[in-house]
Length: 313
Image (cartoon, rainbow, N blue to C red; front, top):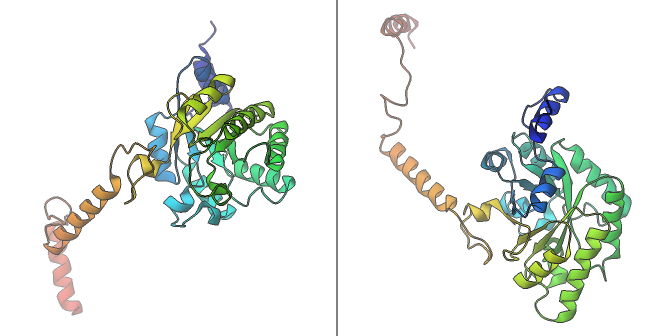
């Protein structure tokens, strides 16, 4: 009797893997969900803890984003993140088990110098963990950024799955004049964005992130493509959504961007709990003798005290 498709995947994975019985989503799984019109979910992760949260939540895709430069490492820009720092965090996050499809950013400086450099670093990022199944690359408009499109085409030709990223691209914030909505000032910019999305699909991208573009524009692009679009600040007409985990959970003491919905305020709650801890330590309410301490047998303690007298501690 033929096993259902997903059960066959599990069975095959267990035959060929000695590391884990957990089967992560594949590109085929994501494409099937897209084909069925089901929205795709994506969230960033930066280390083992946040990756565990994402993996255990059932989210489709986990993005190892270069935003960790600002959210985790304290830099004021993603441009400072080095390959060595990034690979360290990739390895940490990928130790978390779970079904999410893992996508890795290509940080600033890892592909701009030359196409061979970009290919080498893309391979390095995917070799950082076997769980990394795709890379994501930010690109400018196809009319003025021949280089990045050439690199993406070369990567796709080598069998490396690439997720494109257009609209507001944080690595190019200086050339864009800052963190601003894109394709909302004139018609030419809209045409350029649509044509860029079509070009990324043509050269082999399996999906595209659309960041900070008007909802109608994002919806139009989504309708014209045959690959998924993942929106962030692009409205609800895209094929899916991605958010930065520290924004989504309110992990930092700052106002998130307009397009973010914060589902909690981890940062404020963490400060309050730490203040409570400090207060209880100061008042000696923590640790409680009956709850947080370990006991020793009475005869053993008596023996120690007798011997201690002779040793004159």
